[in-house]
Length: 94
Image 1: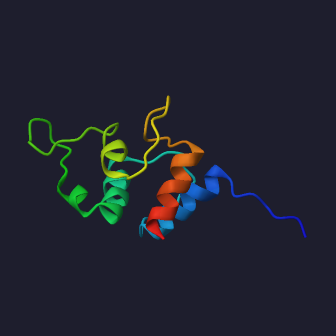
Image 2: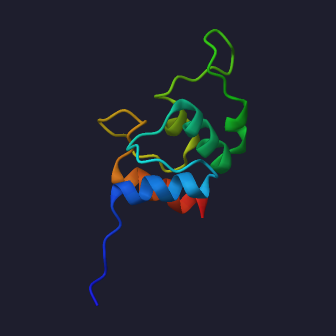
């Protein structure tokens, strides 16, 4: 029997499910999804704010690089994690 490879789309779904988020077909994460995912992995992420000017403000590009251990720098924005980063997030949520 041939082993089927997990696709990036499958990994997005797996991560959303493990984080208790609603399932959708988007191949990116929203700011709120990123905060929830990061909070499940690094509890201090629950205090980040979307509001500019606040001490704990984080824009959408800085959440995963700061709060996901082992995050690999990538050329694309962090809302669209590379396969390696998706696999890392999925493993950290296990």
